[in-house]
Image (cartoon, rainbow, N blue to C red; front, side, top):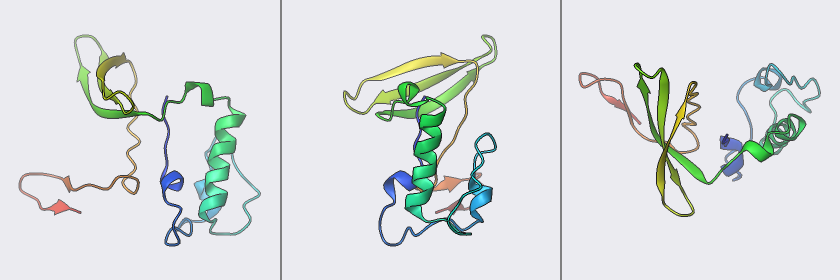
Length: 123
């Protein structure tokens, strides 16, 4: 398992906090009724995420030094073939999974998204 959020990398002055009410930013399985303000700031959000990871003992299952390069569904096998790259060794490898959750963080690593060859790209 890997996790990363915009709140890990965006620690500069321009990343003051979220733009939705803090209680809406909580995970449904770990609600936080104790946000310090209506629009929580970066440090508090990051702490909430870190606390959630620890509360559910997820840290041993997390690998932050692996990048997902792509995934392809194999209908015949009924599973995903996920192409990964180890950021420390630069070795690429494939893992199979019956479930694949894409949690792409557009703020963490922005890139152009082309919706169609007939539409313009969104930057």
